Length: 162
Image (tube, rainbow, N blue to C red; front, side, top):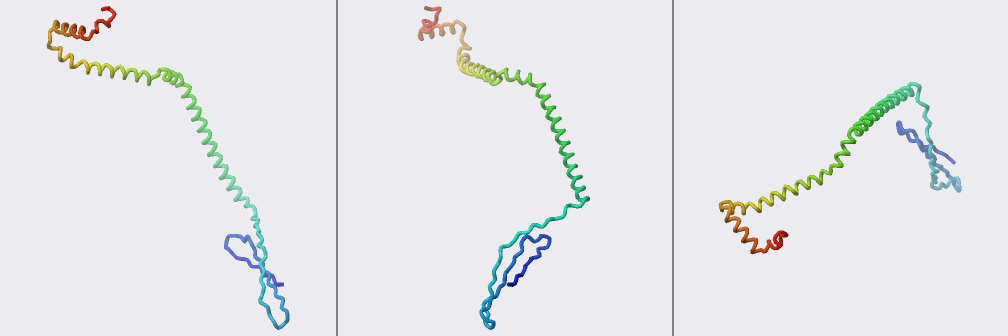
């Protein structure tokens, strides 16, 4: 039995597997050769163990980590201060916020708009009548109104005229 170890050089990547090929030849007679049989064995995985970083590399790594941790701590302190300022502002304005919520501004705005629109519509409806009666004397206006009241029987529906 002949064992051949094949190892591929992959530059900086350490070898992870090694193939072992079993080349066996068992001739039946010394003069007659059979074809060579090759059997591949299961590849084995090896994990290279790198030496620990040198003290200098370790110090550099530690100092970089310490700087980053320091920056993060500084950022946290700033965020905590900002949060405290926001809480103080909220506490100061809480009474104003409560007052604004209780004013019910949307309802008041809606009510004011309704009143304004009603006044404008009433004025627009009455404008043609005002223009019509503007030139008539007061006595004629009263006569026309009395006539309309009796024609429509609106005087009978009024409490004072029953």
